[in-house]
Length: 183
Length: 95
Image (cartoon, rainbow over all chains, first blue to last red; front, side):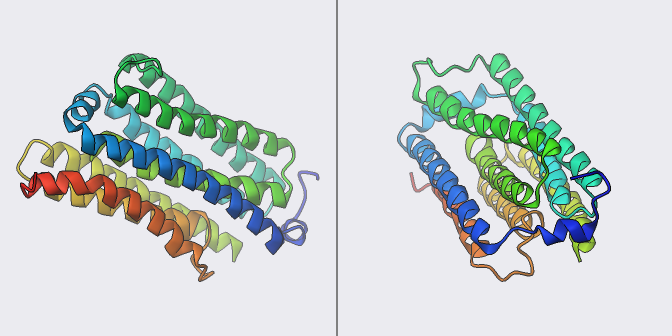
């Protein structure tokens, strides 16, 4: 596909309904996994409220807010990529989405280092916190790499599938952020 | 039509950033006060609003009437209600 590919050419290759089924099976399996992890975290906060409150007090509060903004901006790039008229613009938008994801990963790793967070901690809060946010971080990292790959191979099916999954990862963070840091 | 979707996504991003700023303000203003229950409701409500906007305008499901819209919102609402239940119960001295 060349940089001069037109809107008609892009729409001719629009994803079929069958692709949607696969995308949503993948998305719901992700949502089920994150739902289970978030439920475990909430259950621990019910059983050990003092331990969770103490763990939450040690968390950095500005970085996750910045990360929310970064992920929303990245989601916007992905949404724009899915409806661009030319492949050139689509590639720029995909690059923006990928860069946003990479920035999220860098900030989250920096946050872990400031908090001294590790999976090997002996308290339940820290273990669940790192497990849950780390699992999400792995998805963001993988998604960013795939979005970067799509800059080179931006077929409509690939873009539709990956941007949909990217928005689902975004939705998971929008729910995870208040559950872990605020409520 | 696709260009409208792009403009709508831009408007939605602005609203999402505004809601994030509102959440930040609510956390700083209400966290140390007696309005803990209000903070819980406000944060939960804005989070559900954000999820709805992402579903409608980033995922592009607004005009589809798809059952995925209520399903995705329900997923977010169930997790947030579970998480908010304890602070709400504590705020009303049920514990």
